[in-house]
Length: 317
Length: 194
Image 1 (cartoon, each protein chain N blue to C red):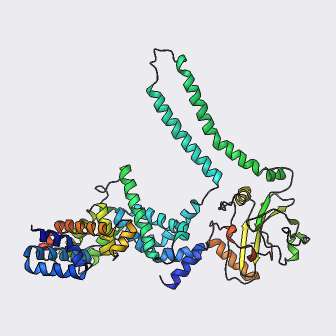
Image 2: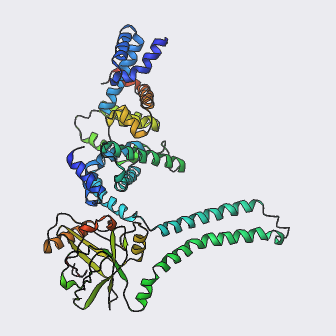
């Protein structure tokens, strides 16, 4: 093959795609007019491309499969929700410990003395290794305990007959429906209002928590009940939020700015374009079934957008 | 990117999960087609598709608004599919040689189409099967480029962006893939069966 033909052959694929420069295109066209071999090369590539475009069968799944796919995807997203940092760290440490243990065991096995020799004189390294492994394996457990200890206040409250706490981000400078029994706490530059009192037999009240990153963390205690308190928020007549509580880890997560607002621990749904009252509740119910399990970062909600207009019992909802 | 899609993406960025479903609905067929052609396996393609949309859901905030969403989606899907195939090969659970095209549902559907199609004459049916098998027999890198260029209609630059390689590499792979296909399809090319 002549060197010119070799160059043309390298350009043939781009030539049939029409991606060569004008000069290169002219060169190839000129060459194939005078070279039968290269002309054949280009013609064969064109035929091959034509075969591909006209006779290749593109795979396609059934409509039933596509219909089920979205449901499966939603389940996957729920299952793969992010977990708390300490849980991930604990899991990673456990995995690492076991891997290390396996490797050390294999390594030590190579130097194991013959069974006819007393192993007593070789036991010290094994004790050291065993101790190191115990420390590694115990670390995740200890970390979990420390994390729980940080939330111990709620546990103690619970055992003393005071129910666990609820965490909410609430704008404090808007009017609240009186019947919901909310004491409107404030940060230092805002005024405090005394709570209205009662909603049925349950007394709900908010207590102060520090401001974190522009959000007021408010703790809701529910007296004389073993049920987990829940609350629905009608926000500026546009947003409806519903949250189920409590979550010790949610409080912990807020303090560390982590998003661990996952199904079963903390769920918040934000609905847009919703009016007020019954319509909002209906929208909420519909959305709740549609979006079951999805989590939403409460931290992403600007404080100014939130105000409490109503608190509903979760059973009513 | 049309306005509706831009709005959906903006909503998803702001944490509105309801915006994901319309995007999935719009692109699921495209992603499936791509995934099943690369993995050559329906079950694997399903996994790739799910991983792709989960990544979209989690990483939408990294998407640059001035870029084409479709290309971004292609990049995620292709990389997921390629990684899936590489992992599968490492595990040696299912190699390309054993994962024939018969494994995915599409082939059965295609055969049913042929059986029901009065115009699907025997010769054309054979040619279709031959061409499809020829493409499936290409090495992974070459097959990916052929799929993206010939069937998905992407340009060299777009493919280079998706595969994170140079345009020259894309051209080279396409060139060798076509030469290989020409050899495989030689009887039909020579006979002018077009």
